Structures are given as structure tokens and as C-alpha cells.
Amino acid sequence: MRHSHTEQETTAANVNLTPLIDMVFILLIFFLVTASFTKESGIDVDRPTAQTTVRQEQASLIIGITKEGEIWIDNKQVDIRSIRAHIEQLHAQNPEGTVIIMADKNALTGVTVAVLDQIRLSGVNNVAIAASKK
Image 1 (tube, one colour):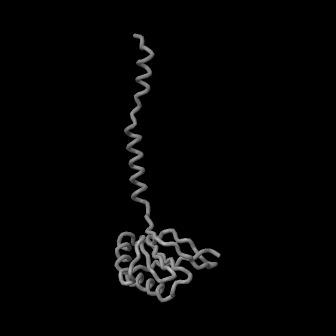
Image 2 (image 1 turned 180 degrees about the vertical axis):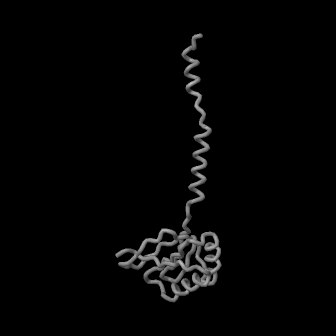
Image 3 (image 1 turned 90 degrees about the vertical axis):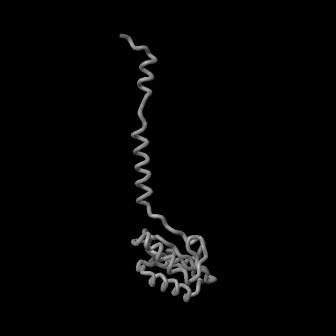
């Protein structure tokens, strides 16, 4: 019994890729489930500088405040009265996340304090204010 050269090539070329594809999909699902998604404010802010800045890794929401006093969450301008509802909804999705207030260095302090107050009223205690390293 002699095998021809073409029979041996076709036998070696038939590699089952199904387990490899299954493993890639399992890894993809794993990374999607374990990834934490950050909600961006949607604006560029000139942050104040500080010597004692610390990097926050678990930010789940960033609130932007412009120098004109506009408040931005997730690429949308929002009113001060609707911040609490936004925060409560996002805090329910990610209870471990931190809310970061990214206020312009020329923004009014009253607006920043009002936003901070609404965040605390929504039940979030992990709040940080963004600053650039000096």
C-alpha cells in the first residue's frame, strides 16, 4: 500500500480551527465583561495645576465645567438640576467607580461646589477634582 504524495498533503492540510476560534471568542467576551468604560465629559478644560495630584484609575464618570459655567456629561450639556439623576443612574451601573469633576481653572467656584453637592446628594462618596501636575 503506497500513498501518493497528494494524499499526504491533503491529510496534513486539514487542521481543525474550531477550538482556536472558540478560544478567541471566549477571550474577547472575557475582556469585554471585565473592562471598565469611562464616560467622558466631551469638552476640553484648562485644568488648574497642583503639586499633590494623584492619578485616579477607577473613574466611571467625568463631569466637565467650562469657564462660562456650562456643565457637560457624556458629550451633552446638562442643567445643574439634572446632574443628580445622571449620577444616580451611572452609580447604579458601577458602584465602585469614582466621579471626577474636571473644572476649568477660571470656572466659578459656586458652580463647582453646586456640582459637588449634587454628586454627594446622589450617594457617591468617591469624588475627585482633576488637576494637572506642576
